[in-house]
Length: 77
Length: 148
Image 1 (cartoon, rainbow over the protein chains, first blue to last red):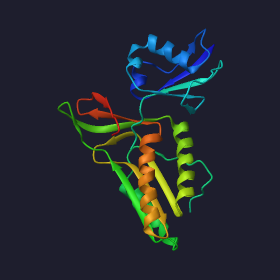
Image 2: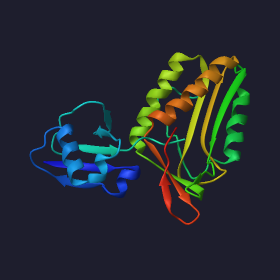
Image 3: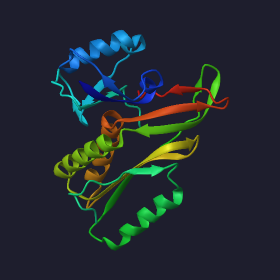
Image 4: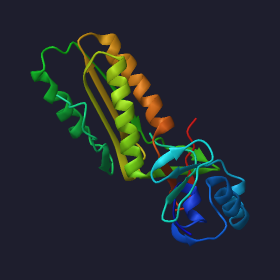
C-alpha cells in the first residue's frame, strides 16, 4: 500500500517526506516498527504521529493513500 | 471583534513587529466594554549552547494541524473565560535574537479572565501546537529547540 509520509523538525533531517510503498502493514504500530528498523535514529527519539492530519494517541488502522505525519516534541513559542 | 467560529491563520512570516502589536492594541479603543487587556510576547533568546550563541530561530510548523488545534484551543478558552477578544500570532521562518516570535492578546471587562486566559493560552500553544524551532548559531550550525 501507499503511505504519504510527512516529517517535521529534527526528524525531517534523516527521514524525508516521501511516498512510501510498503506491504504487510495495516496499522500505525506496524508502521512505527518498520520506520524504527529502517531509520535507527527514530528509535531513540520521542515522537507523535498524525494520520490524515489528526493527532493519534493509540494504534490506528491505516488505508492505502493515508498521510502519516511523524513529529518530534513541539517547540513553538 | 473576533468571530469565534472561523479557523484563523495565526502565522506571520518572520518576526512580529512592535508596530503590528501597537496597531493591534489601538484597534481595541473602540470596544469600550473592555476594562482589561493581557499581553504575552515571546522573544527569541540568545541562548548559549555548547559555547555558541543563538543568532536566530527558524520556525516551521505542520500548519494545517496547528491551525485546527488552535481553533479548538480558542473555542475552549472562549468557553471557559468571559473574554471580549483573543488574538494569537506566531512566527514562521527566521526570527533573530531579540525579536518577537509569539504574541498573545486577550481582553475582557475585568482583569482576571484576561490574565488567566492569556497565561493558559501560552501554555497550551507551547505544548499542543505542532511548531518547531531550529536554533541557528552564528556559524550557521543549528540545534533543535526543546521546550521546558
